[in-house]
Length: 108
Image 1 (cartoon, rainbow, N blue to C red):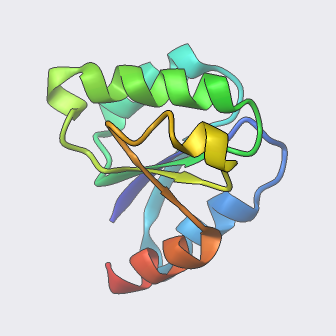
Image 2 (image 1 turned 30 degrees about the vertical axis):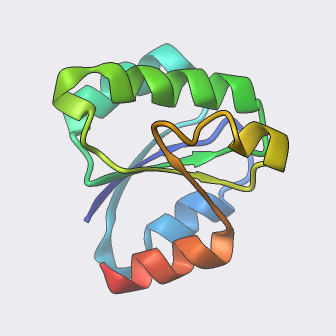
Image 3 (image 1 turned 180 degrees about the horizontal axis):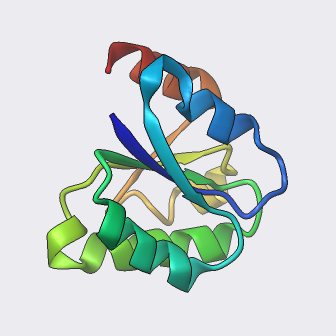
């Protein structure tokens, strides 16, 4: 499976988690505009966003990716968000825990 990770933290745990089971992972950890462009080129099967660090940046980037016609059907998962932030993404993405992400990755 191809997974694109948007993670503005320095922690690599989420990237390592997504890399399991032979998944092909690309990531952007610094710039939302680069994430937007890279996602179009990579065309992942799913997008994972670390919502714990710079939640507004991740949300805006993912929302723009979701609004683009060619990437609008890619499932987007936000991990580690606060309830107040999670409510802001319900129209275009799903908020999950790391444990839920592990289960999703093990099924694919």
